[in-house]
Amino acid sequence: MNLPKSESLSHIQKYTAWNLPNIISVLRILAAPLLILLLLSPDKKNSLTAAIVFAAASLTDWLDGYLARRLGVETTFGRFLDPLADKLLIVTCLIMLISVGGVPAWMVAIIAGREIAVTGLRSLASIEGVVIAAGSLGKYKTAFQIASATALIIHYKFFGIDFHTIGIIFLWIALVFTLWSGIDYFVKFLRKVTISM
Image (cartoon, rainbow, N blue to C red):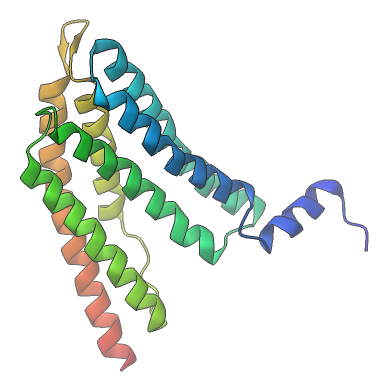
């Protein structure tokens, strides 16, 4: 059967881990080492460059999800890779900012701990055949984490705007949503496991 070129591409990508959305997720992961290099010497130029790289990489989270749905190539590998790329990107930046006094270490520890715990719970849920859809709390958490990390990476004042202070304010909001969404995820998991048993 000869499919039109666009349909043929979609058909092939649907049954392979290396489709366009997943490649974009991998590129997001590869942005992390670049950000590490830029944040090793966070002067004004490097900080602004790092913020642009981080913001651009973060926007690809929306892009790969959109393309996966549009092309009909959502895969199990993609569902694992996409959130992993997000967490790696954000946590890497926050850890790098600790060394230059950009963020309190305890806040980063809570955020990283929550991400590791939820990732572990997702793996357990997958083994149990339990599906827990991402809620709006998780989306707010990610949005504020990205906004805070971007502002904190910029750090310096540009056009009279104190980006560090803005970043810390957003980080506190992100911390609230991080804990709230983490607790919500655990509660949903326990309810679904109890029902399935």
